[in-house]
Image (cartoon, rainbow, N blue to C red; front, side, top):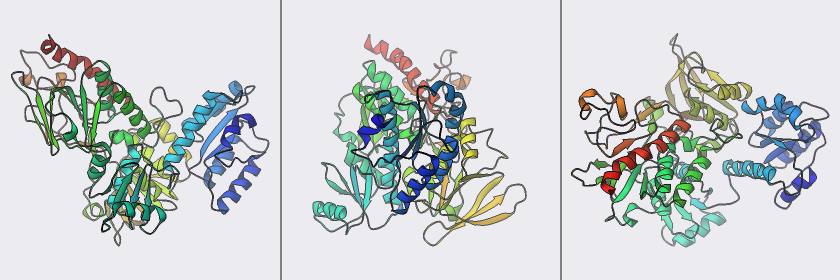
Length: 537
């Protein structure tokens, strides 16, 4: 085992402990000195404690540390059945075979992946791609950092009078206006919105040759849009992806997706999205983030469809609508007024770091809410999940329910809803109502994360694209019979406008799962080919 750890000693402070007792004492000393622990690695059998009980004690001291069991090859198969169930409940992060040599790259690949995940969640990453200078941690500053986190770009916020702050201010050269954003080898910009940052980093569609008609325009960079881009570009279609926010959509905010096929140790939504983006780029797809599509003008008589943004127009022979959904609003006015100041829609990965030692609440009963609660529990003193239903079983995956039940920092309050809240400039308390009795309790709260189901935003679509009464796009046999052509329904993922398709959460009847959205993104490409083939002939 010592040989397996040797390569990390140059970059990390590697400490050895002979027992659980020693590990706890060493961890206590590190934390007392102001340090932290990136990872605990243990054999499957300890001399003085069950390994999972030991990890439980260590997590209480350093909740953000990753936990790995590296079993000796003589015990790997024998110990696996009793230990692997614990990984599904979040008791530890990986069960590995102890390295069998210095260059056991299977082992090291797993370790470096976990260390990379740890590095992306710490408050101040060592490697910084973007510097943000601001004297206050306001809603815009947090939103910018959250966008950069979701794009896989490590960032740090600097005070103006710090070394990093003065460096950026010197590059700016003018009257300070905050927040200032400086990326490596790029200009300093005064950001008034997340979109300013997106355009500064990735450019605007005006940089495209807009006289060119592309084969396919994809609206939305979530799992469905990314899968569409990968398969379309790999099959030779000129493909453009327009994303209003960060690549990855809602899935990109998930701290850890454990049930996605092919990733037994799980993968964060950000990493999954960025790998898919890089894959599509390799095949020639072009991405433009921070671009809100205001209008879609369907083509007719062989003319291309036109997507209108305030940065220009994109003309395409076919369009895939993969714009996903947004979280439904709470619509409690005192709480809505504090959005960005303790109240957040979605997982808000960056804001989670600000919750250290605090009491926070998560509203929602789906997998996204469960994943957010587990991630928040790495930082917050307590996390309470609020749901109107009597339990989580109907809406959340079993593996997440098990992980939540095991985590002592997470509790679930059922038959409950938020009806009030307030504070002096930021969230300080919530009013929680029992839906059965009507009794309202006032509780202290530093953070509220709202993951309240899905609402599509399809106001930019033309009237010719049929939608259901909730606003989701209708495709295939879900289209009303009076909109069928020649007595036949559209193809499975085709809308009521020829050449316009829909995939993922925005489509009526979709499963609202990452895997199903990816599958629809892949499945829509043959339909696009079939639609374009007459024109090609």
